[in-house]
Length: 120
Image: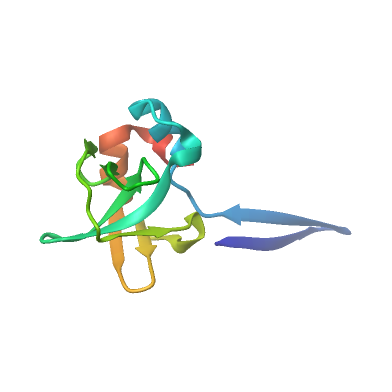
């Protein structure tokens, strides 16, 4: 979500663009030694509920669980791929919204797992 605010100082008008924070696929690519172009955000539906993940292979055979910072090599059929634009940020929480599923992760969990560089 991008917000544009206009600030007027005298006769000059300045447009200030406020961009919501994003999760860095570049940092995840470096941390897990995966090709950034193959990484996709997704939502995993499992017995513990919905979890935000990053899919590392097109087949879905492995994914990064953002809650635990672990690379998992299981093939789950219930992973919904979502585009970056389906991830919103509000009040310290990232929301992953798919067609049927929703998952949430707190910004502090991401920072604890990956450091401050995970938030762009």
